[in-house]
Length: 308
Image (cartoon, rainbow, N blue to C red; front, side, top):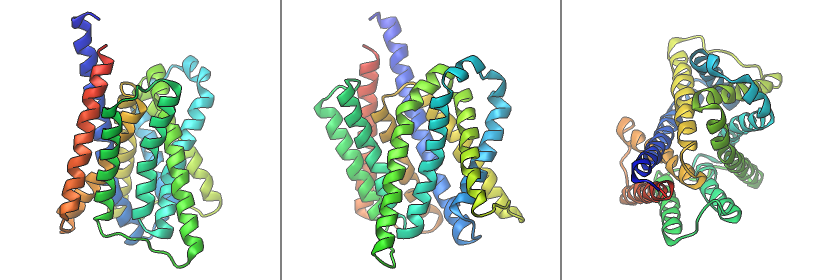
């Protein structure tokens, strides 16, 4: 390949990695907001998910609605609907798992299983090249995430065995849905553009979560602090984060993409230490270093592959 075209492609891969990491960091800030809305204001996971996606959809439609190519969307409508519903489903299943067994196990399953699954699928399809660097980086990322989450002092909180199995089932469902969403995100982002595809996905996610209102009615908060948190979730953790994720998905392999978004638990842990005066253990510092190292290794590997 001509060096003049090789460097721009490598630069695009590194920018895609930065975008994916940014999406994970923005999602990590949302973890604390969701905890506040549930513990202090009594909102249900379904309610939070619906307003989060609804606000995000309105923002993205206002910015990118006119750029949607309806002919392309028509050819991809089934994939778009499945991806939007999967996006809504993996968030909600994760919340429901946390409701039943606490945050530690659902977070580990929902975040650590997808990188393994997408890597195995990529190897089986031949779209991911095997190598020691890939497996070492993946192991370091997963080990670092485990250290971060378990070192946070959040154990399993169950009343009986049935809650444990239900919580684990929700967590596995979240991981499977996130895996499927990741595998099709690049196709949608490349075909329609990150902005228009993100707008369509959030609309479908909002419609999907609205169905839960048939079981338990939703309500918009009637005081300013919860309203501000809901707007933050919609603007930052839905619209902006999904836009960054889609931008990265168009430039990264699914395995690199899922590992980069593991910045989510790292951000949540660091914010907890900063804002809630929670001290970090040495194992968490080591876990964070392993995670960052793995992202750096995969980023260099992605740049090298993209530049060929």
